[in-house]
Length: 291
Figure (cartoon, rainbow, N blue to C red):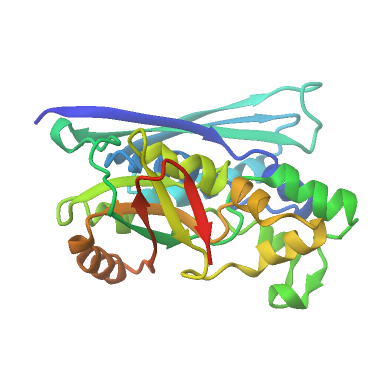
């Protein structure tokens, strides 16, 4: 009736370097879509359509096909139409085996449903939706720690990672939260949402908070994927740095009144989405993590 358009744009970052190394290109497109649609979702917008941009050093049709397959898969998971894109061949700009991938999406929301940071209040409960791993952020640090400093082979398997190849664990695509979260829009009163990307807990969660509010998060309230312990150990990284770079196991956060929590978690579960109560909104004005 009175729609507002909400748009988001992003790329996949240096996670692409790992895709080149592993010669695996069929999931990286899911990451490109996820980084955009999850961002518009936080304002309670439903993704409508997506366009991609692929720049290559040399056009290998079989590689382009794999990339676009991933983008299409991501759009299906987002209930969004892939309406076009651009492929640019740019020799000398890129190595012949390298490419860059970016995109943008447009979503829509009724004006009176548009979610800003004005509804969040102290005492609201934080519900965390688990990530699939590193998602698409922090890969410059991942690559420095694992491949430059420790000279690890991404094709090698590690017992700590469930016997999987390191590269496969790191390339696990970003979770697209659209369907389960969209199921909440007309049934639950959501106060705020945050997509946990680069900047981790410290930079992303405050985006949904009014001035002066903070959060208290219990780090023992959700499982931490093994890959983060692996990176932390290999890089001798401090906890604070980890939570300032990575999602650490929580890819999306919802703030809601305590009375709504059970309903929200039930709807998420009915839509195949696990969730955890991870903390609450406070009047501290800062992000506080504790065990």
